[in-house]
Length: 98
Image (tube, rainbow, N blue to C red):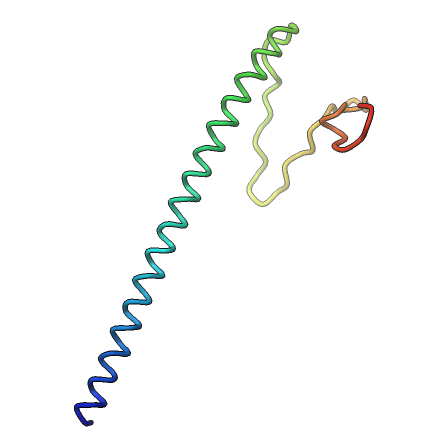
């Protein structure tokens, strides 16, 4: 192997390492951004839950019925009343007049 070949391989290895480091940095930034988005959504949902609790108490509902979380790999139950009554606007998104 000549010195030129060795130098070319060393440059190629350095470029691959640099590309790997850049990819790792981009992945780390993407994960940080996703974590920040999840935290933001959690805060918003918590605030909305508190507001819904306040509104429920204002109309005379003390606490919502406790619902067990769905098992992993199973879809969550559809929101809405189970007694057959219409679910209102929340149960029919996009339907006018509800």
